[in-house]
Image (cartoon, rainbow, N blue to C red):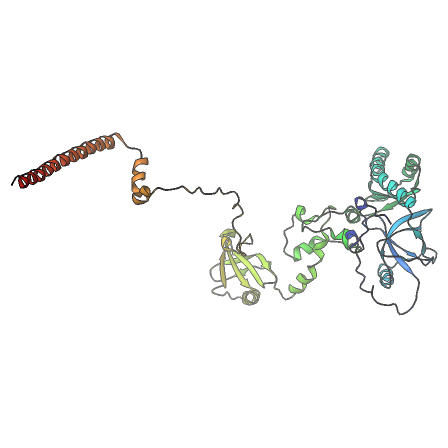
Length: 422
C-alpha cells in the first residue's frame, strides 16, 4: 500500500514510536495469548485522540496500517497503534466505557479513495479553525477554538474549544453548520490538553510530556516549587500552556521524604557573638546555609542539619554556643556550575584565531639577532648625531689601519729586493 505523509497532522505511520504521541510499548507482543478473546485494536487519530474498535471481519491487521472504522455517522480513517493482550490492560487503565455495551467496528483496510478523501479533509482543518475563530469573535463568545479535526469522510468535524466557564454556543453551532456544511461536534478541553494536541519542545530540549506519554493531568501548585527550593519565577515555572509545568510534580515526593527529619528553618540561630538567619537549604546534601545578621548576604555559613538541631535545642534551653561555623564559604567561593574543560577540549574560539606566519630568517640574522632589532628601532636626533660621529670615527680608523698596513707590505717587498741583489 502506498505510504501517505501525514506528519503535518501530528500522525506518522511508523511501526515503532507512533510519532511520539502517547506511545505504548507492546511488551506482550511476542507472548501467545492464554485464551482467544475478542480481537480488540487501539486506533489513533489526530494527535492524541485514541479509541478502541473490534475486528469483526477477522482482518489481518498490523500496527501502523491505515484502516476504515465506524464513525457517527459515516466512517473515519485511523492508524492502528496497539494490538494483542496489552489492549485489555489499556482498557482497564483508562476505564473505557462501551457505547451500548458494544465496540465500534473495523470495516476494512483503507482504500486509495478513502485516503484521498482523508487527505482532502486534513487540508481543510487549518482554514476551518481560522474562520471559526473569527465567527466566535463576531458572536462575542468568551471561548477559544483550539483545534479542529475532520472525520475521514468529510461529513463531520470536532471543534475543540477552551473556556473558563459555561458557554451557550447553540447559535455558534448553527452558524458553523451553515458555513461549512458539515455536522458539528463541540468538545471542551483544558490548557494542558491543548498544548498536548499542538505539541512542541520543552525547555529541557525534549518533546512535551503532555503530547508523548501523559494522559492524566494532575493539578500543580506552587507548594511543589517551594518544597524543591525553586525560586517562584512565573516565567520559568510556566509551561507552553501558560500553567505551572507538570514536571514540578515528578520529584516533589522525593523532596518531601528527604525533608521529614529537617528542623524548621524560620527560627534564627543564636550564638554568643551574633545571630544567624536562614538563607537556603541543600536538601540532599543535608546542609542549611545561614547568613549573619547585619553583614548582608556576602558571608554564608554552611551548617549540617544535625548541628542545626543541636543549636536549636541549646537556644530553647536558654544557652548559646560559642561557635556555629562548621564550614565557611564566601558567596563567590561557591561551586561554579558553568562549563568546565573536563575532556580536553580546546577553547571555543580556537577556529577564530589566525594562523601564525612563519618567516624565513637568513643566516646573518641568526648569527646577529640584535642587528635587525637595532635597525628597526627609531632613532632620536642625538642618537643620529652620535651614530654619524661613530661612523666617521670608524671610517677614520679603517683608513688609518689601511695606511698602516701599506708600509708593512712595502718593507717586505724592499727586503726581498735587497736579498735578490745580494
